[in-house]
Image (cartoon, rainbow, N blue to C red; front, side, top):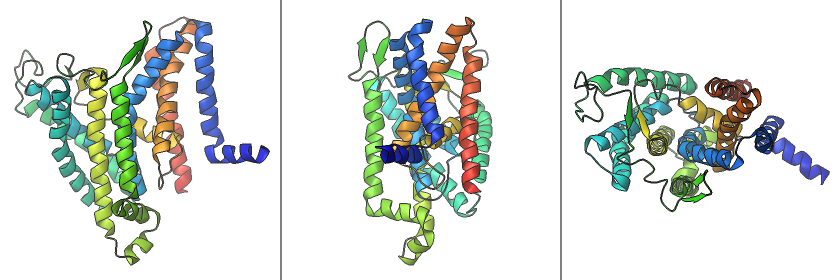
Length: 348
């Protein structure tokens, strides 16, 4: 029994255990400070569903040895382009949200292919270049959103008649189109977006099955032992590029799932820092810069989004002031900082 506990602590790590215990404490404390437990659990589950696919997008690149995908905004931009095109074409419901994904897919493949070619030329410095790619692509798109030929009155600036707005509502198009599939409510405050979870676990299953194929195994071998992979005739650059393409496509799907739950498309600087919470979540879940699993994604997303949801609510109720956004920023950046220090220690 003692050995089992020791093995569990060694496998999980004290930081992750403490984060989990703190999350449990917040849920236990919530009713005692007049925070509705059902609403808190519902909010946590919704945020998990909103962010899960973007965290999953980290897995292919980590497994292939390309490191953490700080270039996730590239996939997010592909998803945003698919989303605004869907709104431009007045597509509604499931047809609208899956239409957005269909239009985002070829863009994500093209972006991922170019991104992969670049990373193959800078082996050893992938994360630094990925960060630059992510930030610069967002900056370039800040100009493109103003000049792209979209003209829907629901998206363009009213006084100018051109240039997309910073925030575009999808409420009348495809908000919760996936989430509401087989969804259910319990009481006044609890809502479970079944469709989003089904989509997330389908994506997880597809990645898990792919990693068991010959190509997936070759990809993982490239990440863990590139010399062995090369000796067995595996095209290392091709496997790395494929992993980047898969990651970019998942990033595109992830932001569309996020938008249909959130109710808005956020352009311009919206994608700028979205890679950092995804990176932090997968690291908090137990992944490293060289190895990641589906379980790391699930555990990390629950812990990250749970802490991010519960901490502001409980602390606000205790101190009787509305500082939720300030607290959320502090907690989010704190967890991101912790996750990134793990990367530095791991590389040392």
